[in-house]
Amino acid sequence: MVLGTSSGAGKSLMTAALCRVLRRRGETPLPFKGQNMSNNAWVDQAGGEMAYSQALQAWAAGLEPQCAMNPVLLKPQGDSTSEVIHLGRSVGNCRAEHYYRDWFRPGWAAIRQGLGELQAADPGGRLVLEGAGSPVEVNLQPRDLTNLRLAQYLRARCILVADIERGGVFAQLVGTLALLRPVERPLIRGLLINRFRGRRELFDEGRRWLEAHTGIPVLGVMPWLDELFPPEDSLDLLERRGRKRGAELEIAVLRLPSLSNFSDLDPLEAEPSVQLRWLAPGEELGQPDAVVVPGSKQTLRDLEALQRSGLGEALRGYAHGGGHVFGICGGLQLLGRELHDPDGLEGDAGAVVPGMGLLPLRTAFGLGKALRQRRSAALWPEASGQAVELEGFELHRGQTTALEPCQPLCGDGELGWVQASGERGGLVAGTYLHGVFESGPWRRRWLNRLRERRGLPSLSERQPHHSRQREALLDRLADAFEQHVNLEPLLREP
Picture (cartoon, rainbow, N blue to C red):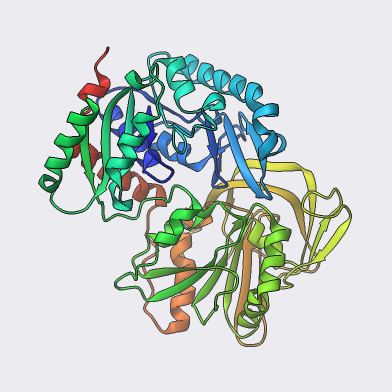
């Protein structure tokens, strides 16, 4: 089990690295996180909802993601309320103060069921567990579903990860160990220092001190890797402010208050010629080459934030003045003309809210959720070359229909729409297909439309699916893990 001294210590990526290393050794690693809180989700082949980080770990393990790997998913909705997902299905909403009273026992039952399904499918597999936040939040320890309660239940051998980049690494580790109960401390079999800059030998004295004062071996010091790994949560996006050398296009991405599924932007982030600029309501839009409006967990709330801050009006002016705007899922919905909420899912029951008015679309929210993987032939941007098939998944409430004739983005006319905006060459498009930018040829075709407007030469459309780049990234992560971390104390039987 990979535990961390705090949120953002690197647990998700260290778990992915561990899965890839074990796979290289001929094992079948089974990634598992009992409870995750995230709006960055994935939909498995059976139509079950799970955290994207566990999908990434499944790919690292060479497995198809399945929601049993993340049996409890909490999706924050604001106002201390979360949607509760058990084994891929929504089972209700809960306020934070009532969560452990109402959901502890059902959550533990879902966790045990998920474990059972994974182990039944691969009896010879090795569970690789990821903890959540800190394992020693003393006010939560008696009701903790996913850290040491699970480690004790499975007699897991634990590695404790600390992020030295954030400072205070000795206090992080020693303080965490000091707050463990006597029955829990023997579970910690090794310490791992993450994100170390500089020569590793400079930390040799610190390593010796930690081992002498804790009696626990330091299994390794992972270096700072100059790679753009998928962010573990939306807070990590704040750290992505560096300017990319060689960037020729600037794409603004609206950092909505209820931002979801930000992994949709990873393929664009990986493009050497593209600089993403994350933009919060209240910040100046400027004149980027395109604006992407990503997914939203609360479409009406985010629409209100855009309108109240003035960014909504700026976005309309940008589109009518010749800009290109692209919306994904909730971003698509708020770009439409009308949003109907008959059941009060996001606001007052029966409310009809005007959207941005950039696409002639009407969205009606409903109690059912669209949860499925999809494939569809791309119809836009047009090209004389080979046809491109888009693949991804739907994850949304609400049904959207066109109020007037509108160009479809792909063969399934209910997955996306495109329309000109204004008289200066503006264009607005949107889709319900999460993962739309993962198709290399389609992504390059879209970027080439932007490059043509700037007088830049076209990029080759002979580009592999983004999953190839993701695989190479996971391999480089595992290479570094194998080089800098000694796993033997962790793998050795007691």
